[in-house]
Amino acid sequence: MWRGLWTLVARAARGPRRPQSVHPPAAEPTSGSTSALRDRNPVIFRPQTLQSVHPPAAELPLGPRPCTRQGSGAPAPGSGATVFALSSGQGRCGIAVIRTSGPASGQALRSLTAPRDLPPARKACLRLLSDPRSGEPLDRALVLWFPGPQSFTGEDCAEFHVHGGPAVVSGVLQALGSVPGLRPAEAGEFTRRAFALGKLSLTEVEGLADLIHAETEAQRRQALRQLDGELSHLCRGWAETLTKALAHVEAYIDFGEDDNLEEGILDRADSEVRELEVALGAHLRDARRGQRLRSGAHVVVAGPPNAGKSSLVNLLSRKPVSIVSPEPGTTRDVLETPVDLAGFPALLSDTAGLREGVGPVEQEGVRRAQKRLEQADLILAVLDASDLASPSSCNFLDTVVMPAGAGSPNGRSQRLLLVLNKSDLLPAGGPDPSADLPPYLLLSCLTGVGTHPQAHHF
Image 1 (tube, rainbow, N blue to C red):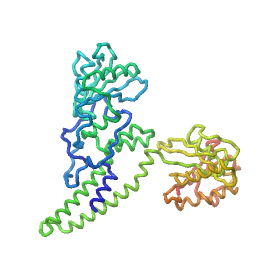
Image 2: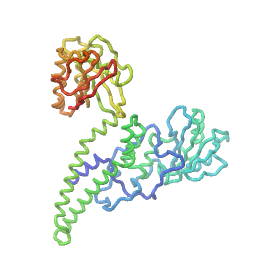
Image 3: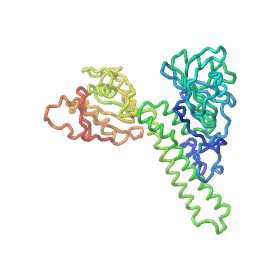
Image 4: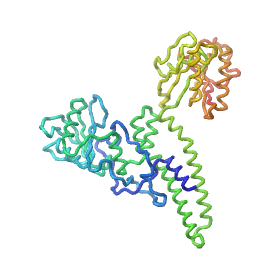
Protein backbone atom coordinates (compact mmCIF):
# COMPACT_ATOMS: atom_id res chain seq x y z
CA MET A 1 0.00 0.00 0.00
CA TRP A 2 2.79 2.40 0.95
CA ARG A 3 4.66 1.79 -2.31
CA GLY A 4 1.48 2.41 -4.27
CA LEU A 5 0.90 5.70 -2.49
CA TRP A 6 4.43 6.85 -3.22
CA THR A 7 3.73 6.10 -6.88
CA LEU A 8 0.62 8.27 -6.69
CA VAL A 9 2.64 11.05 -5.07
CA ALA A 10 5.21 10.86 -7.87
CA ARG A 11 2.57 10.94 -10.59
CA ALA A 12 0.67 13.84 -9.08
CA ALA A 13 3.60 15.86 -7.79
CA ARG A 14 6.40 15.17 -10.23
CA GLY A 15 8.90 16.15 -7.60
CA PRO A 16 7.58 17.14 -4.19
CA ARG A 17 11.02 17.25 -2.54
CA ARG A 18 14.74 17.11 -3.16
CA PRO A 19 17.76 16.59 -0.85
CA GLN A 20 19.14 19.55 1.06
CA SER A 21 21.27 21.86 -1.05
CA VAL A 22 24.76 22.86 -0.01
CA HIS A 23 24.20 26.35 -1.31
CA PRO A 24 23.18 29.25 0.96
CA PRO A 25 19.79 30.95 0.50
CA ALA A 26 19.64 32.81 -2.77
CA ALA A 27 18.41 36.40 -2.97
CA GLU A 28 16.41 37.36 -6.02
CA PRO A 29 18.17 39.53 -8.61
CA THR A 30 17.25 43.19 -8.33
CA SER A 31 18.17 46.57 -9.85
CA GLY A 32 16.12 46.35 -12.99
CA SER A 33 16.96 42.83 -14.04
CA THR A 34 14.21 40.42 -14.99
CA SER A 35 16.59 37.55 -15.47
CA ALA A 36 14.60 35.15 -13.29
CA LEU A 37 11.89 34.81 -15.91
CA ARG A 38 13.75 35.47 -19.09
CA ASP A 39 15.52 32.21 -19.98
CA ARG A 40 14.21 32.06 -23.56
CA ASN A 41 16.71 29.59 -24.85
CA PRO A 42 14.48 27.91 -27.47
CA VAL A 43 13.47 24.86 -25.41
CA ILE A 44 12.79 24.83 -21.67
CA PHE A 45 14.29 21.86 -19.90
CA ARG A 46 11.56 19.49 -18.61
CA PRO A 47 12.89 16.76 -16.28
CA GLN A 48 11.58 13.36 -17.30
CA THR A 49 12.62 11.05 -14.47
CA LEU A 50 11.83 10.98 -10.79
CA GLN A 51 13.98 8.14 -9.50
CA SER A 52 17.25 10.00 -9.88
CA VAL A 53 16.20 13.03 -7.84
CA HIS A 54 13.88 11.70 -5.13
CA PRO A 55 15.16 10.06 -1.92
CA PRO A 56 13.42 7.15 -0.21
CA ALA A 57 10.61 8.07 2.16
CA ALA A 58 12.77 7.48 5.22
CA GLU A 59 15.18 10.19 4.18
CA LEU A 60 12.55 12.93 4.13
CA PRO A 61 12.71 15.16 7.24
CA LEU A 62 9.64 15.47 9.41
CA GLY A 63 10.34 18.98 10.65
CA PRO A 64 9.40 22.26 8.95
CA ARG A 65 11.12 22.83 5.63
CA PRO A 66 13.44 25.84 5.26
CA CYS A 67 12.33 28.51 2.84
CA THR A 68 15.43 28.07 0.69
CA ARG A 69 15.06 25.92 -2.40
CA GLN A 70 16.89 22.62 -2.30
CA GLY A 71 19.11 21.03 -4.87
CA SER A 72 19.06 17.60 -6.43
CA GLY A 73 22.58 16.77 -5.37
CA ALA A 74 23.52 15.99 -8.98
CA PRO A 75 26.43 17.85 -10.60
CA ALA A 76 25.48 20.72 -12.84
CA PRO A 77 25.22 19.76 -16.53
CA GLY A 78 28.48 20.55 -18.26
CA SER A 79 30.11 21.25 -14.88
CA GLY A 80 33.05 23.61 -15.26
CA ALA A 81 31.89 24.99 -18.61
CA THR A 82 30.54 28.50 -19.04
CA VAL A 83 27.71 28.90 -21.52
CA PHE A 84 26.20 31.90 -23.28
CA ALA A 85 23.07 32.50 -25.34
CA LEU A 86 20.62 35.11 -26.51
CA SER A 87 17.90 34.99 -23.86
CA SER A 88 15.43 37.53 -25.23
CA GLY A 89 14.44 35.69 -28.41
CA GLN A 90 15.35 36.08 -32.06
CA GLY A 91 14.40 39.03 -34.26
CA ARG A 92 14.94 42.77 -34.38
CA CYS A 93 14.06 44.58 -31.18
CA GLY A 94 14.99 47.64 -29.16
CA ILE A 95 16.94 45.72 -26.52
CA ALA A 96 18.35 42.19 -26.67
CA VAL A 97 19.58 40.32 -23.59
CA ILE A 98 22.59 38.01 -23.82
CA ARG A 99 23.35 35.91 -20.78
CA THR A 100 26.31 33.86 -19.58
CA SER A 101 26.40 31.29 -16.77
CA GLY A 102 29.41 29.52 -15.32
CA PRO A 103 32.75 30.14 -13.61
CA ALA A 104 34.18 32.12 -16.53
CA SER A 105 31.33 34.65 -16.62
CA GLY A 106 33.41 37.22 -14.76
CA GLN A 107 36.30 36.75 -17.19
CA ALA A 108 33.93 37.16 -20.13
CA LEU A 109 32.51 40.38 -18.70
CA ARG A 110 35.99 41.75 -18.10
CA SER A 111 37.14 40.77 -21.59
CA LEU A 112 34.32 42.64 -23.34
CA THR A 113 34.43 45.72 -21.07
CA ALA A 114 38.25 46.04 -20.67
CA PRO A 115 39.95 47.94 -19.14
CA ARG A 116 37.01 48.42 -16.75
CA ASP A 117 36.60 46.11 -13.77
CA LEU A 118 33.49 44.12 -12.88
CA PRO A 119 30.48 46.29 -11.99
CA PRO A 120 28.95 46.08 -8.51
CA ALA A 121 26.84 42.95 -8.03
CA ARG A 122 23.24 43.23 -9.26
CA LYS A 123 23.66 46.85 -10.34
CA ALA A 124 23.22 47.91 -13.99
CA CYS A 125 26.17 49.85 -15.42
CA LEU A 126 26.67 51.43 -18.85
CA ARG A 127 29.80 50.06 -20.53
CA LEU A 128 31.39 50.09 -23.98
CA LEU A 129 31.62 46.52 -25.32
CA SER A 130 34.65 45.71 -27.47
CA ASP A 131 35.86 42.64 -29.32
CA PRO A 132 38.58 41.09 -27.08
CA ARG A 133 40.58 40.00 -30.16
CA SER A 134 40.66 43.21 -32.21
CA GLY A 135 39.53 45.83 -29.69
CA GLU A 136 36.86 46.99 -32.16
CA PRO A 137 33.85 48.62 -30.41
CA LEU A 138 30.71 46.52 -30.66
CA ASP A 139 28.02 48.46 -28.78
CA ARG A 140 27.35 50.64 -25.77
CA ALA A 141 25.28 48.49 -23.44
CA LEU A 142 24.03 47.95 -19.92
CA VAL A 143 25.83 45.11 -18.16
CA LEU A 144 24.91 43.29 -14.95
CA TRP A 145 26.97 40.97 -12.77
CA PHE A 146 25.32 38.25 -10.66
CA PRO A 147 27.90 36.32 -8.58
CA GLY A 148 26.70 32.87 -7.58
CA PRO A 149 24.80 31.50 -5.81
CA GLN A 150 22.61 34.63 -5.89
CA SER A 151 21.65 34.25 -9.55
CA PHE A 152 19.03 32.52 -11.67
CA THR A 153 21.15 29.40 -12.24
CA GLY A 154 23.07 29.48 -8.94
CA GLU A 155 26.34 30.01 -10.85
CA ASP A 156 28.21 33.21 -11.67
CA CYS A 157 26.13 34.97 -14.32
CA ALA A 158 26.51 38.06 -16.48
CA GLU A 159 23.99 39.85 -18.65
CA PHE A 160 24.57 42.15 -21.61
CA HIS A 161 21.61 44.39 -22.52
CA VAL A 162 22.57 45.41 -26.04
CA HIS A 163 20.72 47.03 -28.91
CA GLY A 164 18.63 44.39 -30.67
CA GLY A 165 19.89 44.71 -34.24
CA PRO A 166 21.09 41.45 -35.84
CA ALA A 167 24.60 42.80 -36.47
CA VAL A 168 25.04 43.91 -32.85
CA VAL A 169 23.74 40.65 -31.41
CA SER A 170 25.85 38.56 -33.79
CA GLY A 171 28.98 40.60 -32.99
CA VAL A 172 28.58 40.22 -29.23
CA LEU A 173 27.88 36.47 -29.51
CA GLN A 174 30.98 35.98 -31.66
CA ALA A 175 33.05 37.97 -29.18
CA LEU A 176 31.84 35.79 -26.31
CA GLY A 177 32.66 32.68 -28.33
CA SER A 178 36.28 33.85 -28.59
CA VAL A 179 36.72 34.01 -24.79
CA PRO A 180 38.48 30.86 -23.49
CA GLY A 181 36.20 28.54 -21.54
CA LEU A 182 32.94 29.74 -23.11
CA ARG A 183 30.64 27.79 -25.45
CA PRO A 184 27.11 28.32 -26.82
CA ALA A 185 24.40 27.02 -24.49
CA GLU A 186 22.27 24.05 -25.43
CA ALA A 187 18.50 24.43 -25.63
CA GLY A 188 17.12 24.89 -22.10
CA GLU A 189 20.54 24.67 -20.46
CA PHE A 190 20.10 27.71 -18.21
CA THR A 191 16.92 26.22 -16.72
CA ARG A 192 18.59 22.80 -16.44
CA ARG A 193 21.45 24.31 -14.44
CA ALA A 194 18.99 26.16 -12.20
CA PHE A 195 17.23 22.86 -11.49
CA ALA A 196 20.48 20.96 -10.89
CA LEU A 197 21.66 23.55 -8.37
CA GLY A 198 18.34 23.71 -6.54
CA LYS A 199 17.16 27.11 -7.73
CA LEU A 200 14.00 25.64 -9.28
CA SER A 201 11.99 22.53 -8.41
CA LEU A 202 10.49 20.14 -10.95
CA THR A 203 7.07 21.80 -10.82
CA GLU A 204 8.61 25.29 -10.96
CA VAL A 205 10.54 24.31 -14.10
CA GLU A 206 7.28 23.29 -15.73
CA GLY A 207 5.65 26.50 -14.53
CA LEU A 208 8.45 28.56 -16.09
CA ALA A 209 8.04 26.74 -19.41
CA ASP A 210 4.29 27.29 -19.34
CA LEU A 211 4.72 30.96 -18.46
CA ILE A 212 7.05 31.57 -21.40
CA HIS A 213 4.64 29.83 -23.79
CA ALA A 214 1.45 31.32 -22.28
CA GLU A 215 -0.77 32.98 -24.88
CA THR A 216 -3.87 33.82 -22.81
CA GLU A 217 -4.51 35.42 -19.43
CA ALA A 218 -5.76 32.18 -17.89
CA GLN A 219 -2.61 30.33 -19.02
CA ARG A 220 -0.44 33.10 -17.59
CA ARG A 221 -2.19 33.00 -14.22
CA GLN A 222 -1.93 29.23 -13.91
CA ALA A 223 1.75 29.16 -14.96
CA LEU A 224 2.63 31.95 -12.52
CA ARG A 225 0.94 30.12 -9.65
CA GLN A 226 2.93 26.98 -10.44
CA LEU A 227 6.16 28.96 -10.79
CA ASP A 228 5.51 30.55 -7.38
CA GLY A 229 5.41 27.07 -5.84
CA GLU A 230 1.66 26.53 -5.34
CA LEU A 231 1.81 22.95 -6.62
CA SER A 232 5.12 22.33 -4.82
CA HIS A 233 3.57 23.31 -1.48
CA LEU A 234 0.61 21.02 -2.09
CA CYS A 235 2.87 18.08 -2.96
CA ARG A 236 5.13 18.81 -0.01
CA GLY A 237 2.15 18.52 2.33
CA TRP A 238 1.29 15.16 0.81
CA ALA A 239 4.85 13.92 1.25
CA GLU A 240 5.00 15.07 4.87
CA THR A 241 1.69 13.37 5.67
CA LEU A 242 2.89 10.09 4.19
CA THR A 243 6.30 10.33 5.87
CA LYS A 244 4.71 10.97 9.25
CA ALA A 245 2.42 7.98 8.79
CA LEU A 246 5.41 5.82 7.88
CA ALA A 247 7.21 6.95 11.03
CA HIS A 248 4.20 6.09 13.20
CA VAL A 249 3.90 2.63 11.64
CA GLU A 250 7.62 1.94 12.13
CA ALA A 251 7.39 3.16 15.73
CA TYR A 252 4.46 0.83 16.35
CA ILE A 253 6.40 -2.09 14.88
CA ASP A 254 9.53 -1.37 16.93
CA PHE A 255 7.93 -0.28 20.22
CA GLY A 256 4.40 -1.69 20.06
CA GLU A 257 4.80 -3.52 23.37
CA ASP A 258 5.91 -0.41 25.28
CA ASP A 259 3.54 1.91 27.08
CA ASN A 260 5.17 5.06 25.73
CA LEU A 261 3.21 5.10 22.47
CA GLU A 262 -0.03 7.01 22.21
CA GLU A 263 -3.19 4.97 21.98
CA GLY A 264 -4.68 4.62 18.51
CA ILE A 265 -1.50 5.73 16.73
CA LEU A 266 -1.83 2.96 14.13
CA ASP A 267 -5.49 3.75 13.48
CA ARG A 268 -4.68 7.43 13.10
CA ALA A 269 -1.91 6.67 10.60
CA ASP A 270 -4.25 4.42 8.64
CA SER A 271 -6.92 7.14 8.56
CA GLU A 272 -4.46 9.79 7.37
CA VAL A 273 -3.15 7.54 4.61
CA ARG A 274 -6.66 6.75 3.37
CA GLU A 275 -7.52 10.46 3.32
CA LEU A 276 -4.33 11.11 1.37
CA GLU A 277 -5.22 8.37 -1.10
CA VAL A 278 -8.59 10.03 -1.73
CA ALA A 279 -6.96 13.45 -2.17
CA LEU A 280 -4.39 12.09 -4.63
CA GLY A 281 -7.05 10.28 -6.63
CA ALA A 282 -9.16 13.43 -6.86
CA HIS A 283 -6.12 15.44 -7.95
CA LEU A 284 -5.23 12.96 -10.68
CA ARG A 285 -8.83 12.83 -11.93
CA ASP A 286 -8.87 16.62 -12.06
CA ALA A 287 -5.61 16.81 -14.03
CA ARG A 288 -7.45 17.11 -17.36
CA ARG A 289 -8.70 20.58 -16.41
CA GLY A 290 -5.13 21.83 -16.18
CA GLN A 291 -4.31 20.13 -19.47
CA ARG A 292 -7.28 21.87 -21.10
CA LEU A 293 -6.01 25.20 -19.83
CA ARG A 294 -2.49 24.46 -21.04
CA SER A 295 -3.34 23.21 -24.54
CA GLY A 296 -6.85 24.59 -25.00
CA ALA A 297 -10.32 23.09 -24.68
CA HIS A 298 -11.68 21.34 -27.77
CA VAL A 299 -14.90 23.10 -28.77
CA VAL A 300 -16.86 21.51 -31.64
CA VAL A 301 -19.53 23.50 -33.49
CA ALA A 302 -22.14 21.07 -34.84
CA GLY A 303 -25.62 21.19 -36.26
CA PRO A 304 -27.74 20.49 -39.34
CA PRO A 305 -26.80 22.07 -42.68
CA ASN A 306 -27.28 25.82 -43.10
CA ALA A 307 -27.88 26.45 -39.39
CA GLY A 308 -25.12 29.08 -39.22
CA LYS A 309 -22.25 27.03 -37.81
CA SER A 310 -19.61 28.66 -40.01
CA SER A 311 -21.00 32.12 -39.22
CA LEU A 312 -20.67 31.37 -35.49
CA VAL A 313 -17.08 30.17 -35.93
CA ASN A 314 -16.20 33.34 -37.85
CA LEU A 315 -17.90 35.45 -35.17
CA LEU A 316 -16.00 33.80 -32.30
CA SER A 317 -12.64 33.79 -34.07
CA ARG A 318 -13.13 37.35 -35.43
CA LYS A 319 -11.83 36.34 -38.83
CA PRO A 320 -13.20 34.58 -41.94
CA VAL A 321 -12.16 31.02 -41.11
CA SER A 322 -15.03 29.28 -42.89
CA ILE A 323 -16.89 29.98 -46.13
CA VAL A 324 -20.43 31.24 -45.49
CA SER A 325 -23.03 30.52 -48.16
CA PRO A 326 -26.83 30.08 -48.31
CA GLU A 327 -26.20 26.77 -50.07
CA PRO A 328 -26.37 23.81 -47.62
CA GLY A 329 -23.30 21.60 -47.30
CA THR A 330 -20.66 24.30 -47.89
CA THR A 331 -18.39 22.92 -45.14
CA ARG A 332 -17.32 19.36 -45.95
CA ASP A 333 -14.20 18.95 -43.81
CA VAL A 334 -13.30 19.87 -40.23
CA LEU A 335 -11.86 23.39 -40.06
CA GLU A 336 -9.97 24.23 -36.85
CA THR A 337 -8.80 27.55 -35.47
CA PRO A 338 -7.35 28.48 -32.05
CA VAL A 339 -9.25 31.24 -30.25
CA ASP A 340 -8.94 33.21 -27.03
CA LEU A 341 -12.31 33.18 -25.25
CA ALA A 342 -12.22 35.66 -22.37
CA GLY A 343 -8.64 34.67 -21.55
CA PHE A 344 -9.14 30.93 -21.93
CA PRO A 345 -7.58 29.07 -24.89
CA ALA A 346 -9.82 26.95 -27.07
CA LEU A 347 -9.54 25.02 -30.31
CA LEU A 348 -12.68 25.74 -32.33
CA SER A 349 -13.75 23.12 -34.90
CA ASP A 350 -16.26 23.88 -37.65
CA THR A 351 -17.85 20.65 -38.91
CA ALA A 352 -20.02 19.51 -41.81
CA GLY A 353 -23.79 19.70 -41.39
CA LEU A 354 -25.21 16.45 -40.07
CA ARG A 355 -27.64 14.94 -42.56
CA GLU A 356 -28.29 11.75 -44.54
CA GLY A 357 -28.60 11.03 -48.26
CA VAL A 358 -25.70 13.12 -49.53
CA GLY A 359 -22.76 12.43 -51.86
CA PRO A 360 -19.67 10.46 -50.81
CA VAL A 361 -17.52 13.55 -50.19
CA GLU A 362 -20.02 15.23 -47.89
CA GLN A 363 -20.78 11.90 -46.24
CA GLU A 364 -17.10 11.62 -45.29
CA GLY A 365 -17.36 15.10 -43.80
CA VAL A 366 -20.38 13.97 -41.77
CA ARG A 367 -18.46 10.93 -40.52
CA ARG A 368 -15.56 13.15 -39.41
CA ALA A 369 -17.96 15.54 -37.71
CA GLN A 370 -19.51 12.70 -35.72
CA LYS A 371 -16.05 11.51 -34.67
CA ARG A 372 -15.14 15.02 -33.47
CA LEU A 373 -18.33 15.14 -31.42
CA GLU A 374 -17.10 12.13 -29.44
CA GLN A 375 -13.76 13.87 -28.76
CA ALA A 376 -15.15 17.30 -27.84
CA ASP A 377 -14.78 18.94 -24.43
CA LEU A 378 -17.68 21.27 -25.30
CA ILE A 379 -20.29 20.99 -28.06
CA LEU A 380 -21.88 24.14 -29.48
CA ALA A 381 -25.08 22.71 -30.95
CA VAL A 382 -26.38 25.24 -33.50
CA LEU A 383 -29.96 25.25 -34.81
CA ASP A 384 -31.87 27.66 -37.03
CA ALA A 385 -34.31 29.42 -34.69
CA SER A 386 -36.69 30.09 -37.59
CA ASP A 387 -36.75 26.45 -38.75
CA LEU A 388 -36.93 24.31 -35.60
CA ALA A 389 -39.69 22.11 -36.97
CA SER A 390 -37.71 20.88 -39.98
CA PRO A 391 -36.75 17.17 -40.10
CA SER A 392 -33.05 17.96 -39.95
CA SER A 393 -33.47 20.09 -36.79
CA CYS A 394 -35.66 17.49 -35.09
CA ASN A 395 -33.24 14.70 -35.96
CA PHE A 396 -30.30 16.71 -34.58
CA LEU A 397 -32.17 17.37 -31.34
CA ASP A 398 -32.98 13.68 -30.94
CA THR A 399 -29.55 12.28 -31.86
CA VAL A 400 -27.11 14.87 -30.45
CA VAL A 401 -28.67 17.39 -28.06
CA MET A 402 -30.80 15.12 -25.90
CA PRO A 403 -28.28 12.24 -25.52
CA ALA A 404 -25.55 14.67 -24.41
CA GLY A 405 -27.16 14.95 -21.00
CA ALA A 406 -26.65 11.22 -20.45
CA GLY A 407 -22.94 11.27 -21.37
CA SER A 408 -20.94 10.69 -24.52
CA PRO A 409 -20.63 7.26 -26.20
CA ASN A 410 -17.04 6.90 -25.01
CA GLY A 411 -18.02 7.42 -21.38
CA ARG A 412 -16.40 10.85 -21.03
CA SER A 413 -18.30 13.66 -19.38
CA GLN A 414 -19.24 16.14 -22.08
CA ARG A 415 -20.93 19.50 -21.98
CA LEU A 416 -23.31 20.86 -24.59
CA LEU A 417 -24.55 24.39 -25.17
CA LEU A 418 -27.58 24.79 -27.43
CA VAL A 419 -27.40 27.89 -29.65
CA LEU A 420 -30.44 29.10 -31.61
CA ASN A 421 -29.09 31.21 -34.46
CA LYS A 422 -30.84 33.56 -36.91
CA SER A 423 -32.93 35.30 -34.27
CA ASP A 424 -33.18 38.21 -36.72
CA LEU A 425 -35.54 36.06 -38.85
CA LEU A 426 -38.04 35.56 -36.01
CA PRO A 427 -41.18 37.72 -36.27
CA ALA A 428 -41.33 40.57 -33.80
CA GLY A 429 -43.56 39.63 -30.87
CA GLY A 430 -43.89 36.07 -32.18
CA PRO A 431 -44.08 32.95 -30.02
CA ASP A 432 -41.12 31.98 -27.87
CA PRO A 433 -39.12 29.21 -29.61
CA SER A 434 -38.22 27.70 -26.25
CA ALA A 435 -41.25 25.39 -26.06
CA ASP A 436 -40.13 21.79 -25.55
CA LEU A 437 -36.45 22.79 -25.87
CA PRO A 438 -33.66 22.50 -23.31
CA PRO A 439 -32.10 25.77 -22.11
CA TYR A 440 -30.47 27.68 -24.96
CA LEU A 441 -28.80 30.88 -26.17
CA LEU A 442 -30.67 32.95 -28.73
CA LEU A 443 -28.55 35.07 -31.05
CA SER A 444 -27.99 36.33 -34.56
CA CYS A 445 -24.56 35.84 -36.08
CA LEU A 446 -25.54 38.31 -38.80
CA THR A 447 -26.24 41.23 -36.47
CA GLY A 448 -24.12 40.07 -33.53
CA VAL A 449 -27.06 40.54 -31.18
CA GLY A 450 -27.75 37.75 -28.70
CA THR A 451 -29.67 37.15 -25.49
CA HIS A 452 -28.55 34.89 -22.67
CA PRO A 453 -31.61 34.06 -20.57
CA GLN A 454 -30.88 30.53 -19.33
CA ALA A 455 -27.55 29.26 -20.59
CA HIS A 456 -27.09 25.75 -19.27
CA HIS A 457 -24.32 23.13 -19.48
CA PHE A 458 -25.48 19.52 -19.47
